[in-house]
Image (cartoon, rainbow, N blue to C red; front, side, top):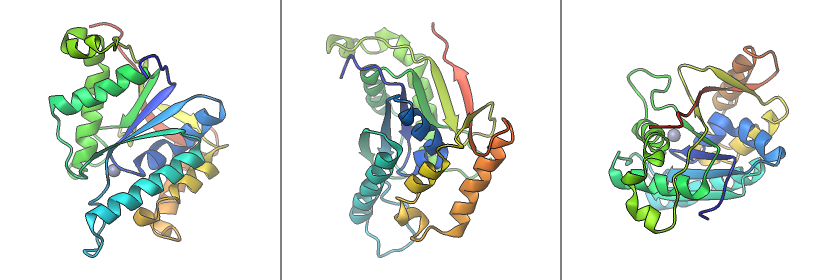
Length: 236
Ligand SMILES: [Zn+2]
């Protein structure tokens, strides 16, 4: 694993977040033969409003749904970190766990949710924590080997991620044309009935279509996904 070089590594707080945010982009990359690896940080075991839906059962369903969605998108590897839902905390141990993945898979692009999101006051704590922690891991941690002498001894080498893509961003500055893969995104999205209903609730289907159409207006195509994109600083 230590000499992999994948095109993109996508860090998702919960099952479904990646489909929602960048499913069309992932499908397009996979079609172009570029390797995308998914990392799902939590097991999604709290995201249900029915008191009869117990956490263990929900976690099992969510994992199954996530694997089905990844398969439709052409993602061959999904890494489940299985942290408790609504339980992510910014700790040095968690950052080391993410660092180990970045140094091992050596992605060109790292994608995750924008920690500052759309909503000013209410947003999900897992999204805040993961987005912030992944950014801090990409830069400066990954290029500062004195923060991980132990991993160097295990054979890991420093890695410079080239680019970050943040979805669910209040400040989009980059749009990816997903006109050819929007249907695949929708099909993958529908693999999550425990979150969006079966058949999919109209509200969710409308929202996803509307946001793809709105993003597309910026680049003159039918459907797009919006990101905050930045080249990663290549030095300390
Ligand atoms: Zn989420």
